[in-house]
Length: 140
Length: 292
Image (cartoon, rainbow over all chains, first blue to last red; front, side, top):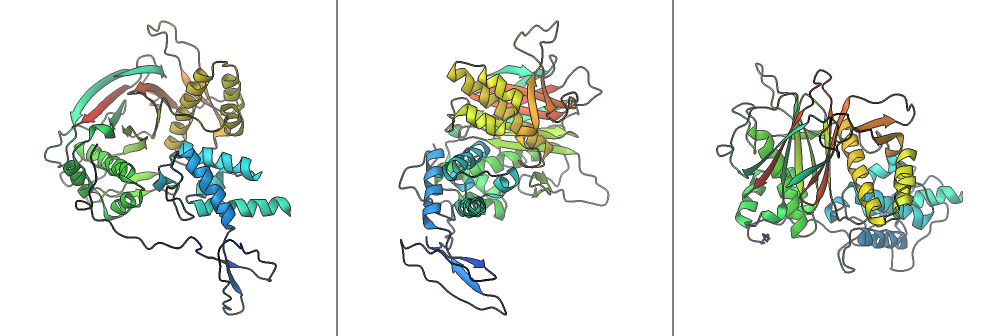
């Protein structure tokens, strides 16, 4: 099998975001914000005009669970680099893999994902965010 | 090399060729555009591509955006597959006698409103682009590109040995139609059940890709793939009609779709094209395996 050597193909380094990359969430009224205690996360308040901007991560344990399910579906080794920003396609998932992953997530989290939402999931983070949204809706 | 599992029309002729995988358009053996009654199916087996210098030549054909996508893939195997998939599409389309401007490197692509890839022809005052349609599918061990003229096309390939991680019947109940669930439930042998599941998946996926509206545009549950009765007088007893039906109205057969299911190099390959209602004799399927 042909090996791709570093000399032949130029690798363009992509800026890597840390695992604890914080997602900006806009909330109109400040409700309770849950922050995972696993790693140290900084909570930044940046008032912008009349809106509060609070940065918080989708629970890292949700992202972890998604990563585990993705690894299992794609038969990736435990130490393979799968993080929130990993794109399913870049990990080698085809359409059947993606649907299998969505189904496994439905079973794991007790949610139901509609086709429109499933189609928009391209990264682990997308899946984790959607899960939290649906779990919250279930709980409400 | 291949065998028909099921075909829509018993008169579907299949021609199978092996062609060299060429990079520059000068060495591409030019082909006339497909007629409306033809479906061209090109495929390559990544494991047969062993030369890294050739792989670099293919990489060189890609647009900057495609190259970026290649580098985003995790690991050499996936990078290689991504390169070959785009190289296959570019060299395949450029091979047809479109005009002197078209080369593998010069082709531009875009996505339609639903995300389906299509050629973005460089328009000229005097020139109308041909109504050429294509669709790609790949697994780790096979990459395929189907081409038609003036007809929508969708293809899907899956490894025959592919394991399903979820419970098959649970999966089918969640995503497939009632009739399909019944069919799968009636199969007691788990291995046969898995194979039939995969065949149904490829056919359904090929149909949705032909429609080009995305996964949510034609949810799997809203239509049934049905194997019709054998056509009388047919020599090949394996062949029977494949039809797609809307679940909302079972009396309306969506009769303008043609399905072909093949077993190809340990893969299932499903091809879905629009039927030419004037062509009662059925179409011709050309299979090309590009080898080095």
